[in-house]
Image (cartoon, rainbow, N blue to C red; front, side, top):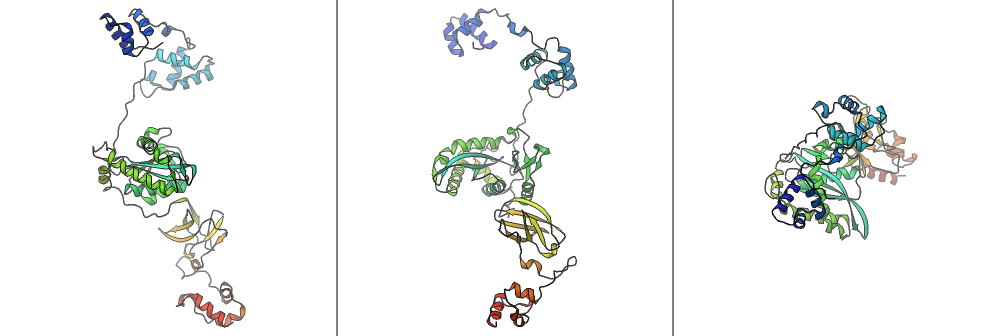
Amino acid sequence: MAKLTREQVMVGAEMVQRGTSVRQVARQLGVTEGALRYHLSKPPEARDGRRDKRTSVDGLEAVVRGVLERMACFRVTGEGRPVQARQVYEVLRRDYGYRGSYQGVVRHLRRAFPAPPVRALRRVETPPGVQAQHDWFNVWSRVGGVNREIQALVGVLSHSRARFCWVSWTANQLAWHGGHLALFERYGGVPLWVRIDNLKTGVASGGGATAVLNRSYDRFARSVGFEVDPCRVRKGSDKGKAERSVRTFRQSFRPLFREDWRTLEELQAALDERAQSLLDRLQCPATGTSVREALAAERLVLSPLPEVSEPFDLIVGRKVSRDCLISFEGRRYSVPFEWVGREVEVRGTLSQVVVHAGGREVARHPRHSRALVVLDPAHFEGPSTARVTRPTPLGWRGRLQMAGLSGPSRQVLVQLPVREQIARPLDAYVQLVEAHR
């Protein structure tokens, strides 16, 4: 039976009294004729007897009130927020042997206590250049003749509503950082804050203001020059503009994802072209202008694009050993000897291991090499410092072996100048030695 409100019943009764048929009134109210006749046949003062039906909580009223008082529930204190009915139900079962239903507790709380007040929502429009919201979504598309799942990172500037999409095969740490850089390039700068969800590539634990950021992402954000604003746990409304942008891309960009693309780069170019067209079609609520005009004004207050040219997915601190090596991912890499005994920062990029110290890059090696010890001979050369004495220079035997020469070549080799005095490439001297063997 359809449920009619008191106002609908009163309107229906008035229309019937004025001569309108019950069938026509029911059609206009969107209910069945039988439901309307049933309500019109009841006297106005009649009350639904189901409200007076006993519940399984009857007899435990004092217990329920005591539970609510201990939990400082709004229902009895008049302050704060009401305790969830599920919590009351679990306490009654655990401590008081309650064997009734959960719905019985719900009906009792609704009957015995007034409804809690409605909490108003605060609508916020951030100033230009202050916030962007980033979020992943996945979509299937045919690339290279194969239907594959693609990860898409959507980004939206909260003020101008300029939204862009960057696609990747994966959503790992490198893709997360690389996607940020790609979106910043499309924004034309870096916003002050970036609001994200509580994904593991961004947040190590917790959520909201107390979230502990992923170490790599934290360093990446500081390197680029923005602050991270994680959402509260299970509060998708905290990044409502990004959620809305995901729906926009799924709907407006669906024909693009259904096409057959030769490469992922071709798909990305098509997505960028479509995003540019949206800038003219959509209106910015904060300014009343087109999104393109609002974006042009917002770009004036965005921070300059970062100089970070290669995103990294792993960042650790390592202490340089006396043999000028640091350990990283099961391998050992050389570092200039002047950093012996000091802490350096090691970043793992897509193909390189980059070592930073003193605010600059001091070493770079291939990543994931087959060798377990990767050395750069230049890291062991140079003058001593006030803190570290340079390694002992190679003797004549060591120099012969490093040059791949035999003992009889000693007389020629000892005539070679030291490295600091070499005026021509060392290969030229090696050829000279070989010529005299």
